[in-house]
Amino acid sequence: MFVDSVELTISSGKGGAGCISFWTEQFVAKGGPDGGEGGRGGSIFCKVDNNTDTLSALRGRRVIKAENGRPGEGRKCYGRKGKDTTIIVPPGTQVVDMETQEVLMDLVTEGDIRKFLDGGKGGLGNTHFKNSTNQRPTYAQPGLPGESRIVRLEMKLIADVGLVGFPNVGKSTLISTLSNARPKVANYEFTTLIPNIGIVGVGDFDSFAMADIPGIIEGASDGRGLGLEFLKHIERTKTLLLLIDATNYREMKYQYEILKDELKNYSDELSRRPHAVAITKIDALSSDEVNEKTQQFLADLSLKPNNTLNKFGDLKGATSYGQVKEEWEDVSVDEPAFVMPISSVAQMHTEVLRYALADLVSQQRKMDKADG
Ligand SMILES: Nc1nc2c(ncn2[C@@H]2O[C@H](COP(=O)(O)OP(=O)(O)OP(=O)(O)O)[C@@H](O)[C@H]2O)c(=O)[nH]1
Ligand SMILES: [Mg+2]
Image 1 (cartoon, rainbow, N blue to C red):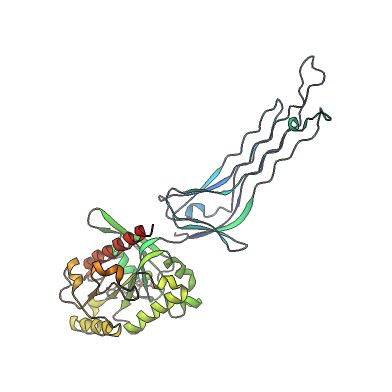
Image 2: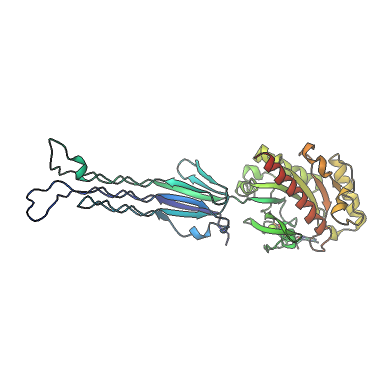
């Protein structure tokens, strides 16, 4: 099962107590104080590891606690330090304080190790308190308590392409056609309740990650349907593929506008992300119908059909729209990078789509690099 949020109490270790002890030995009547310092409590670290892709390893655990420091001992011996605990999380995990909802840590970069909670300091032993007026102190410090936080670990998918569309438009079918993911496909709305990520291979060496996200409906940004729960997953996808169902009772232009509106209502930044459009289920229509519908859709968006997508493969005369690559960075992201009719079931144009998406992703990666 896909787990993307777990609640936990996380505590660092308590410091060990300082020791009260006096030197004793044969023929030594009154040895001085020799109580050692307590060990520091273990700290909590978080480490980002690409090899885990869910938080499921943490499921069922309620408390994660680092070891306490050991108390100091006589003969000025230090107590042993408590062992640190490292929590391994997938990239894209946030640590959110349950009380304040504040994001305490944002763990994105592979290999990153960050200290979350400091272990409590060990107490000083009585050796430390010896002075000219008190040669035999009978006092030592207790160890300091560790820190404790009730948090929610939340994983937000980081995918190159997020599939966005109304329920039942064929998002899961497309991801199972293009990638290794096999989400459930069924002819009713809201089949997909949790996001799935698939790796789409491009040629022999290249690939990108695609996220299948539950369907969006009008009012999603106010919490309707599955609401905000899943819009937050889209937040971390770098580009979006809007799926518009050619056979749906909802008009294509309407679908497109609602999707754009919902994204914009959720966050301005999301609506400015590069996006493309796939018109789905075209096997259910005649090719004339598909061309007619696509032409109408492009006209509604004030876009002129062109055939630039043919460089990625043969669209067999289907009407489409694509921005020429070199111009991409200057073009407003308000308009789609391309509009392409497809059918996942009949595998029509899905290969062209694969390469066109790879192209969009590689441009996006270049832009990310340029931004640092
Ligand atoms: N004719 C045709 N039907 C399709 C195509 N793609 C998907 N379908 C059908 O459309 C229905 C919904 O497909 P899903 O892939 O589950 O749709 P979804 O967008 O993931 O739906 P939710 O998860 O509910 O949002 C299923 O009955 C699919 O068989 C296609 O290319 N052609
Ligand atoms: Mg689905």
